[in-house]
Length: 357
Image (cartoon, rainbow, N blue to C red):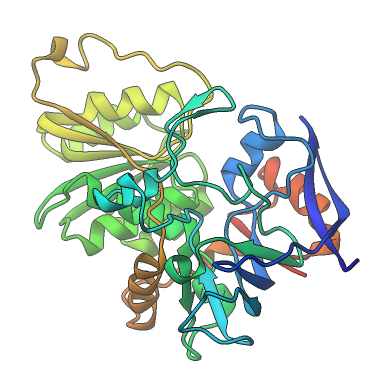
């Protein structure tokens, strides 16, 4: 029985490296030898027990790798080919997919959550913080990586880049818009870049960490606000001459930042929510204009599928955005428990870690 190393959820507070059997390949599947992956903030929610998954599950949903074995029904790919797969793996034929919302393929009630959508890696099936990962519906989800791009250049495509960009896209950011992005972690930084690429003339990045604010300017922020030094709501209203912003993107997942987004919106503005929340949200009466402000609140689950991945890689290849600065630390898979300790406690200026088996 062939075995591999994998980072496995044991119980809240414990994700450990264990030996697991290399999965069998079904007709529509592909077995990928993982060459680079990473840890996501959602994985930390899992580690803390804030998002429950089954014990013994392999964690991780951001794979870059090489096709090791193809299912008998998979066409258009070859073994040895470099590929990525999105964090969200739609089937291509579900009602959600046919309605144009593949990220919600499989939405329903599980683990006490509703509408978790097509997020399967490290959630309902084994993920990619391992030497190998099985990709379902391979012909829908595998995107070949151009030879000109390195693993680290495309590492953000499966989740962080797709999610952040979609935060701007779903909000309908238009040419000339003013956009505020609350929290400049990896997703917030990608939302900043996405807003700028979508045509925003003014992007305001908000965070409490100087190194993240510095990178925010590299991603396209025209103004940055250090929330540890000034009140961000007041500063945004000052920067916009009291008008407020057209779009506010919430990229942290807390009541405080969600409410702040509402309070800086112009009448008729849009709040784009990207955060994963671990407790109930409340909407303050005044900030919501008692429901009469023509505000919109939109949410986003990371778009997946091979066409989405192809488009994101073309943006990188065209040098419209460079996300390599986000990889601040590198670990071998053997040291993934140390990587979790660093990333989970946000030490040493960490943004993203690259994990290589």
